[in-house]
Length: 187
Image 1 (tube, rainbow, N blue to C red):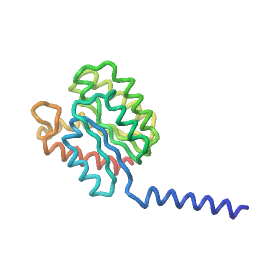
Image 2: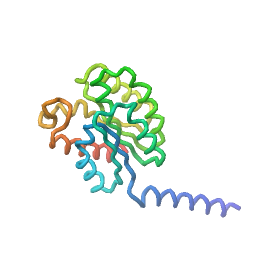
Image 3: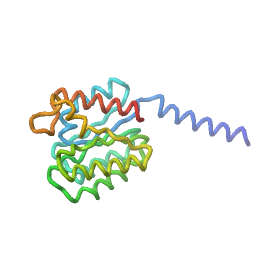
Image 4: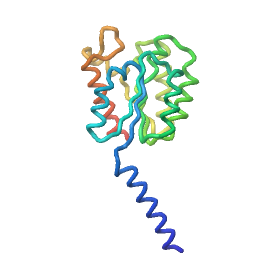
């Protein structure tokens, strides 16, 4: 009987290793226009380094508007998520952002790794509230990590377009590199 249990355990371990180490880890990236502009760079950075990237980016999307897409993607729970949402909520001073933020978290929480990309605090009080909620999640859940793009992007003026929100081509490449770096470092 003990040999049979050992065989089952070893078979399960082998299946897990094959699934997680023998194939490309799936990474789902969900964002707004910042991700849409950066999509070619993000896709290249992830796929060139062995990740299976699925990118869903909709310019102008608010947290609540992204919920259907997040729930749909979450049906095939990936190894990791990169979430870059909230800029449009901040720009519209959308006070209703907390509920969809929590619903989003409930959908993605089972992933091995979740990277939240912060919103620029220059976008106002809602941005700071969203970033604070991201920090709280990261402090409470070991699978949550923060990429502080909201601050980093302003460290290099050539990364941000004249509107102060959207990345330039250099910024798009930088964001993709930072997302890859965070995946490798934190996950």
